[in-house]
Length: 230
Ligand code: FPP
Image (cartoon, rainbow, N blue to C red; front, side, top):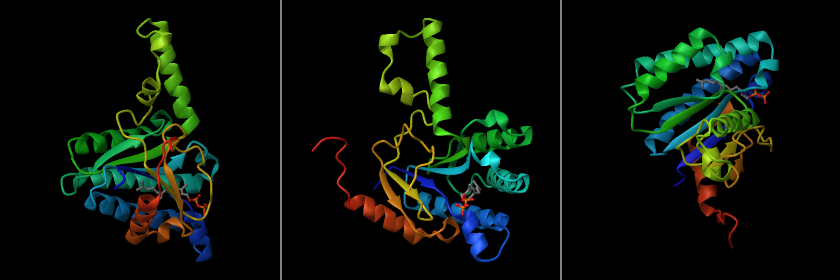
């Protein structure tokens, strides 16, 4: 079994457009799919699931669309804070939270606080996340420590960098899934996915089902992971 699965939930707008619906309804359906899949990930005993909910580039979309995605996130966090004890999921937001509204930041904090002792799947939600931005922030943090003479340049290792990322302390994803047939990683977890197996699925994210996750895990299990060895 993989310990950590990362998902690029792509194709919400295409799903909506193909049905002649407003794109915001695509995101709404995508959020429902996400809840279902996270619950399933918890049920099958997965350790970590990390999803790309909003990238640093997504601000370029219309105000209406950005607002709709933010509202879905806000509602999820609020709702989940209330029922944190009923499912054993640990919610963790990754990304640059400083650019988000105070209300959103409070909801994030509350949700993480309420679920921090849960022992089931760790659900990382990437919001205002950019992989290169994450690395820049890590480099700044490490440089600051060097400047303050808390760390020597020679002591900087891969581990130093891993431990300075949002995913510090977590294993790297074993498997990366992207829906909607696009074959890119789009600035998602560039440091963490260097040895991940990639599985690309043709379906748009709102159509993703539990059995698609099972299938992706089966494909992963058939692959021969070499980590650069033979
Ligand atoms: C990608 O499809 C999807 C997004 C940019 C937004 C994903 C957000 C959600 C599923 C809502 C998150 C909610 C919770 C509860 C965490 P796209 O819009 O790029 O679609 P396209 O490729 O068809 O244009």
